[in-house]
Length: 492
Image (cartoon, rainbow, N blue to C red; front, side):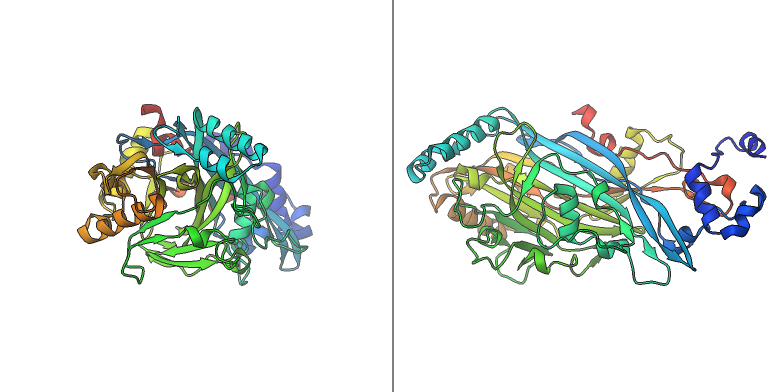
């Protein structure tokens, strides 16, 4: 009979041992004693499968931009992996477990000679720190940044928004910010307890980690660090409840400077509040944007040590959750903190109210090529809320910001649309020079402008890729690596 089904349906896939065991677990000893015909129609109806709602997860990735203007950095390396989530428990008196799957996409941003035209802090370090070992370590880091250095990294982790039927237990409720960050960084950030006995969803050890080693907080508590100050500017859309749209979040990011009151900042529609990881048991209140629900963006000061880098880099870690189409997308990364490393240089975080989520529907069974996916993405951006900054995607501005107390016009496109207003632009210009150069308007200003909320592309598959009611048409969908299409790496 199996052979007949295979001939009649070319997309037929026979059951593997895991699926067969899952099916028989749902029908008990009576089913085990019967023939294979007794199993037909019951696959997908096992104890575990009946108990879990929302089991599918499909890839998502950050949009890499429609173009690459001068003085910009883009993603050049990527990794795509699928990982396993085990759901176990009792359903209708039967102990059962099933396997769900999540997706992980990671991209790196590299810079050639990031030190170019920037003034390092070595003289300042030698004058203030007599420890020759610290001076050697600082010089080793600057030497690394003189070559081809990793200066940013982004990740997207996709989980199914799985939950137990007729229960308040949901996977999303267990994926708290500290636990998500522990799984992706390997660093215990805040209270992130190990899995307890009886935990239904087992997932943490399966999620791939960032390529850089992350340490929190930076600077380490009780030290000032050789690379202070840390004056990061936030250029945020939305009124934020303040007269100034620009906020110096440096003091809030550094626990040593805020009397250990905050570990970082939470950003939503321009409003900025301090938070501690220990109190961050959830992602915060969601805001609906189109078909997606968005939580606040969390930003913390960390150090990041990429592969091949001899010393940790002062960096900014950011992460938020997006729920879309029955799935949870955890979007984040880290970026180098220019102001901590260089004189007359500043890091500007460009924060839109929320990322644009662009769905890409794939009906063909593995037949959608990168160019076709990219055309679909751009078409979706054209019909959405996307403006000039949005279409640049995750492109990072790197280099000259301006001189003589004014910003270059070429910088405008990398800022939120609100900063094209003359008043808000003047406020930003003032804050850049006052915070990064001590108000010396005659100096030349360098830095990076990092988008916190570029568009997110989310694959949605057609009905053929989902489990159906009868066992013989269970067809798994070939996963699509979004990165080449989303970032268009091959053509840059």
